[in-house]
Every structure is written in structure tokens, then in C-alpha cells.
Image (cartoon, rainbow, N blue to C red; front, side, top):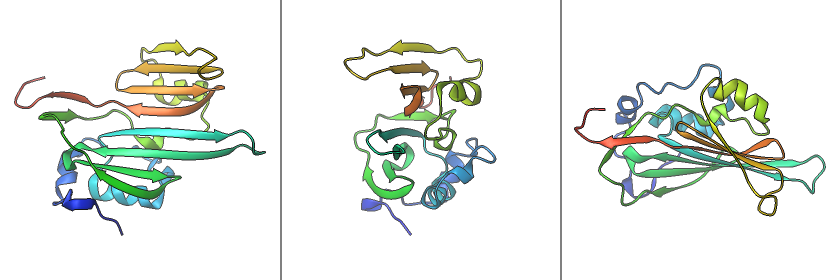
Length: 175
């Protein structure tokens, strides 16, 4: 169905070894599109991701568009999806000689249109987090939340941005 540019992915069986401790959360894999499920089956969950949810307010009802970028540092590849459909890939260049530690979150956890309360209940739980209000002249009624390995953006009380941040350590060094 797919495949990545420039031979960035040579050994599909290698992905299972990299992600053996990153099994998608039960019941949430269904929230991935068919294209996304294929990538997870072949390569495992992304090692990092960004989700941007654009809400078009001019339409009634409001129209949501979801843009996702999944990074696979182990394969030096970034995958793009628009509304769940494979939109392209790109080689990641100039990666430092680091080992990526597992990301605690998965793209399928972040449902378009989630409220801050839903995110707190389903994802944040009792973890510590920091809130950053943005000036209204930048984005009206906006909020950023930062917690371990995750940055979240809300606009008018709805999730519009999620970015996972992988932890890294030097190879050969103990944690």
C-alpha cells in the first residue's frame, strides 16, 4: 500500500523490536484510520507525533480537519496524515546519535474536539502539569498545558494541538 521514500525503511520486522513495550492501548486502535493502523502494524506506534486540529468556525456546524505527523526516528522517517489518510512521508535528517526512550502517549488517545476536562480525566489523570495562558491578541481564549513528554494546546476549551516529546539519552549510558 505505502512505502517510504529513498529506502528509509529497510527491515520491517525491526519495528516490532523497537516498540515491543509500546503496545497501542486496547480499544483505542480502532480510533486510527485504516492507513494509520497499517503503519502501526508494520512499524509500531510513532516514536513522536504532532496533531493539529483545525476548527473552521465559519461553517455550521463547525468543520474539523486533523493533521498528524508521526516521527519514526529509528527509520529516519516522518509520516503525514490528513484526516487519517496517508498524505506523504519525508526523510528525517541530521538526527543526533541518541536512543529514543518510549513515548507514554499515542495519537489515538487524542480525540478531535476533546474538552480540557476530558483530557484531564482520560490522559492527564493526577500527573503534575503546568498551564500557560496565551495572550488573546495571539489566539483568543487559548491555553497551553505542559506535562512529562507532552504539550497540549486548547482553543475555546477544545483540544487543537498535541505534541509528544520523546525522552533521549546517550547510547551506552545507563539511565
